[in-house]
Length: 407
Image 1 (cartoon, helix red, strand yellow):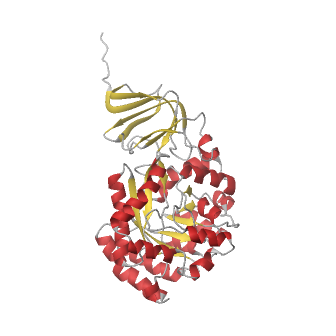
Image 2: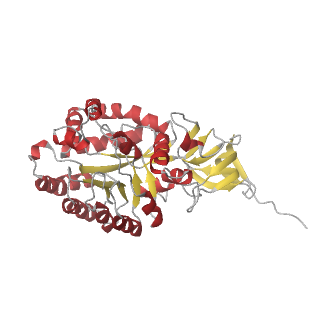
Image 3: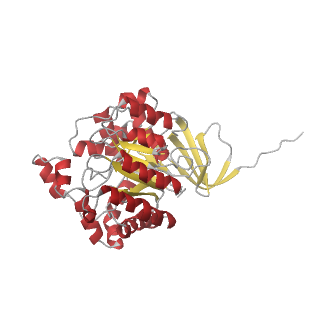
């Protein structure tokens, strides 16, 4: 008789003595005595230390009982832009509405002018402090939209700047082409002509250069109609690019139904979405991305239909919507607190919304967003006693360490 000892599994790093919120499946996935092993930048085990195989690691990190969640995912930002819109903030404090400012030449078009005037290097340099603020809170995947160039040259410049951020920071950047953000002044108000330019010139060029991972549009009275957006979505689909939509922020144009019809990755804002739209969104698997920073900053009073989203089983994500005009926010932790306080999301919903569901909204849930074997080893390690602390605190960052691709 003899015993055959099973050899230990090799890994690069082992995080032990941790409490895990794996977010796997449809639950938060709490593991009190957890262990994570990683090799070549991917998780090879995440679960209970008691049932784990034997590992031999090059480095072992004792987490001293700290919590580990997936690295956070900010699935909706406009973080690359020139200038700022502090003056418009003053106008809103004096009583001007978002629509009034936009129709008077402010809003997106004012940022367009500053963005066109900036070099690519200047756009990267201006964005990095904002990006670094998100990284410091455990963000490991970040979506960045264009939409402040509004012509081919400057949209390409903005998307190149966004791609470079993912090269100079340990961060996965997903880029989104938002040429249909507003009508540029040179279009002289001819929205149909501008949409034709987006579809026939800008989109094919951006796609051929591999600058965009998805295509977005702003479906609103001050922006574009569902019919105009449908033309963009048809062009994007023909080019093999997934779509997403700014929908029902200021009014209900039934953009959510349009997004669902095209199987959009996400429909974002949704303050004025109705039950028909929510039902369509849930059926299509399109993620509802709520943006409490914009709701707060523009002093909106019409809340997104959270109860309807729950009732119909829709996936809910939260994002910072970091942008110069309506959400100059660079804290995903504060966005969670706002979502809980303003929209009454639960702690579990908030945690899922900035990890698993945000990854789903970017089409990368197969790679990130949960702690599961095979996925990228993107972790956020927290000095907290319970996950609720990530949602309840304001202006306090309990991040102990951030791990990206196992490092």
